[in-house]
Each structure stands twice: as C-alpha cells, then as structure tokens.
Amino acid sequence: MKVIAFILFIAICLGAGALGIIYTAPSIPTWYAALNKPGFNPPNYLFGPVWTLLYIMMGIAAYLVWRQGFENQEVRAALTIFAVQLILNAVWTPLFFGLHWLLAAFIEIVILWLLILWTIVKFYRISSIAGLLLIPYILWVTFASLLNFSLWQLNR
Image (cartoon, rainbow, N blue to C red; front, side, top):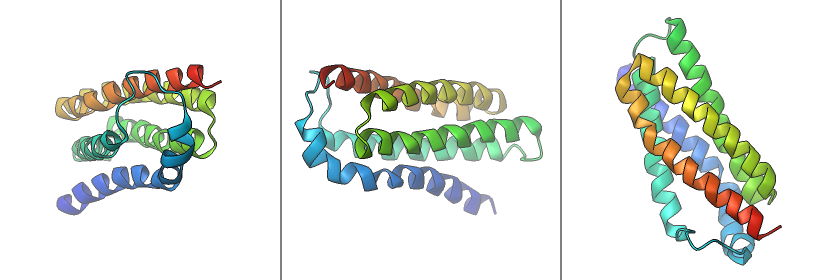
C-alpha cells in the first residue's frame, strides 16, 4: 500500500505538470518565441527537467506528510493546502501560455507563491524533510514570478 501511495503522489504531481504541455507546446515556438524577454530568461530546454524534478520532490513531500496518518487533522489540513496550490500550479499554464494573460498569470503566481509558503510551513511541522523538499519549488516559483512580471512589463 505504501509503495502504491508513494507512486500515486508522484504521479498526481507529474500529472498536474503534464496538463500544462497542452498549452505550452504550441506556444513555445510561436507566441512565446515572439515575446520580448529579459536578459535572465533561461533557455527553453531548462524548464522541462527542472519542473519534472520539482514535481517529483513535491510528490515525495506530500507522501511523507500523508504517511504520518491521514486521520490526523494537521495532515489533512496540510494536504488540502497542498492540493489547492497544486491546482493553482496547473492553472497558471493555461493563463500564461494558453490565454496569454501575462498580468492575470502574474497575480495567480503570487497567490500560488503564498500557498506554497503556507504548505511548506504546514509540511515542516509534520515532517521537516517534507517541508525542506519544497524549498527548491518555492525558489523556482520565486524566479518564475520575477520572469512572469518582467515578461508582462516588456510586452504590454
């Protein structure tokens, strides 16, 4: 059961990321390629591996919290917040790459960042390793927020 749960948590997180490919793939060579970009914009090939690793780490973190007992109110609360931030994570991609709403995507990613921080705090209280596993995620989303803001400013 624990192995299945471990795999399931990782699969759910990877699945949330995979949903974004529907919007990202057609936009990269067309709309995104035409945007004015800041000097710190990373190469496109970097995003896939980074996000894949982050989703795996997120799944492991969620599993470590779940393993502490879903009957525990703190565990349920932490996983609920995690689920909400994962949904917001998945919503950002259609806003940005699908609808090309750079400002709306920026506002959404700021809310996402706050929920990630809340998730880290809740996870850390239950499993310090789980909380620490999310630090690279919030750092990357911090960078992505700055990039999103810069793209909005350069292309409005």
